[in-house]
Image (tube, rainbow, N blue to C red; front, side, top):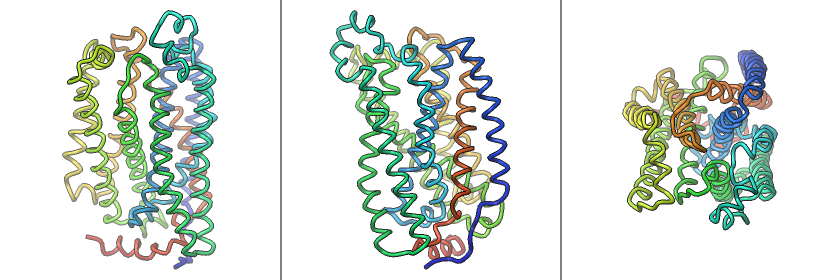
Length: 396
């Protein structure tokens, strides 16, 4: 079924894009000042923001794939939001360049003098070396951008002439794509976060990152859907039943993230190995323990309790409030992961730790809103679109 209504983005989206661009310019100026004042803090804060926002893009791409495979009503009405978010990936590849310039400030294994004095780093050198690091990063972005582009391209073609073969193509790519996504994120999390402390390793870390990306992507998708539901034409589309479905999925990802986090802690703590335990010991002292407690209560316990409420999940403003809390705590969690490194046992919060993620977020939002305006807000050629809209009208 092809729906005739165009479902174009409201004018407020373009206004929000201009605001995001203005915030990005101001933030870029502040980041440039921060770079001149403290290079070390700039690169660490930039990595914090970059890892979060590229994770949102990747999580949205994975959600899109899950939606094609599951065919749920939530996936149909949110498809154009997650597609637009996944199309930011080529631009995130450009925003990776400052990390390339800050290699020596971020990764101690990139210094040949340090490697020459460390037997463990010498054993890891065939993998942890600068040329191979860049090759892997380029490969990741090429694969991610290619999958996101194909899914968006085929989805737009489906709008023009819907055929069963097009839906089948997207399902096949999504099935294989989720496997590719998992493998690349396992390596990416090792390269960009775990190798900040190259003596430490965790077999759970990549899975933890995947769960975190899915959670951040769902939180952002819910926030955008609630905001769009305030304006025509989506005010006639997005219903409490759709928000309820997305809220249930976000609850599932909150529990999944908590399960992976606790499993990693339990495995490492019970193993009591000198190569692994110090990673947690540094995060249980010097003020970092309070950040860890905040993550436990505000990232898991409070969202978990709130999302148990059926009424909350069906109410847009309260569900969006929980989603925004999760987005903030995702950034705090990454800060907790990368902060206590290279002698930073005592917790220090630099102003760049807020400015850099906000600046990258403003750039990301501006690109995302631009992409959101290039397509109808609903996949008009989706065979199950009418059913998804009906679910919103009569869902309980």
